[in-house]
Length: 115
Image (cartoon, rainbow, N blue to C red; front, side):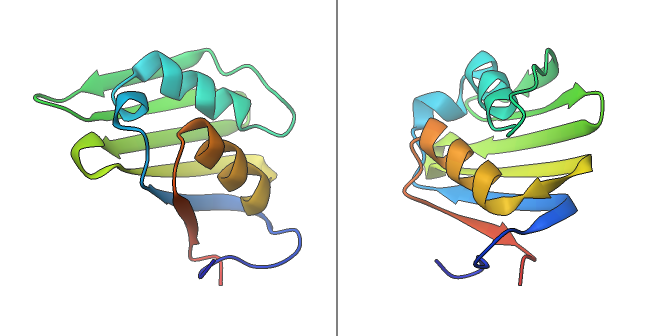
């Protein structure tokens, strides 16, 4: 997939874009918060999420846990989402992107700026 490196890609900041996502998932703040927490390779619980629902559709929000901050912006009508991650523990694009893509039922994803 274009924009993805082979091998481990550890960093402190990562921007992921997802396309062809399940629109219902992109409209579900609880589901997205759970997906963000489950994307953590250490399986950290990230209970401190806040989301704002836009009318007629779409969400923006953040999930915060200790050393990790995840911000989410969704466009259900386009099946598109961006997830911006900051972590003091480093981030593996393959782990986060693959796990979140599966949970959002995305057709594909790109790690922006990973080249």
